[in-house]
Length: 308
Image 1 (cartoon, helix red, strand yellow):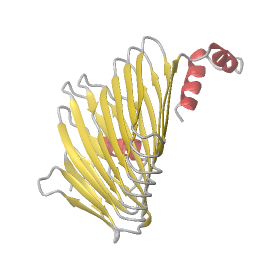
Image 2 (tube, helix red, strand yellow):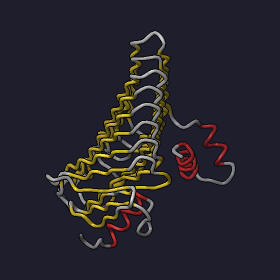
Image 3 (cartoon, helix red, strand yellow):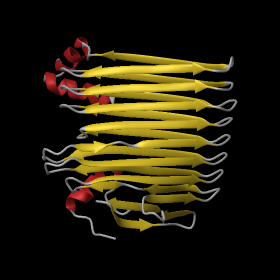
Image 4 (tube, one colour):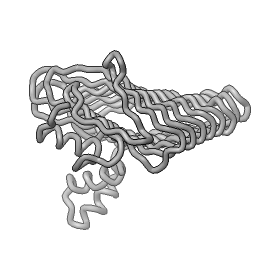
């Protein structure tokens, strides 16, 4: 294990909301090295034999426990791919906090690609929070390409909060999910790009069991010359319900492409999609400016409220 410096600790605060070592299970990773690990009686964290990542094993019936697995990259030119597998036991109820921050002050690109696979047991509940953040004044890019695979057994539930608000130059986020009978998936994505940043979000959800449901909602803001793409497809293979929504604010010279789609392979699948892209309404700005805010301050207030 290694001791983290001040920059790395600040990044940990940004991506995991940690100001001190958390209670419960955790695995800290900094510049491809283990920076700290703790397990509990109900949650075990084991390094993979080939060194490619970790296995997180949560015992059946585990309640009110958490796992923190933040990653920090502060070395310019570092590129890595990590595979983390989560085995969430039957009837457990846990919170998993992940996230990656890249601080790049050099002229080489830094990249972290985290592949997370979730095996959610029958009747289990999981809340998953993933935050991405970039900082540093170097010319090298900050690149994050997360991949998430979710396999949900009967009557399980998973809530996913995916957040990227600042500093990531390029990202392709790919999420796939397969739901058995009675399983429920909720995804809330919040995204902001600026400068020349690009961001692509891809969601593929299969409702394979009777009574399964999915609700995938993205809120995003594209500023300056940045580009975004939201590509979501929900497939109903059984009597089920699905909803996907993209709600975006476009500013300056930003560009946004929304591609919501549905595929019904069962007469009793009920699927809905929505998409809206537009600029900040003038009357909203005027209302806030009459309260004493400048136009820039009014825009920031509107954006902050929109992305909450």
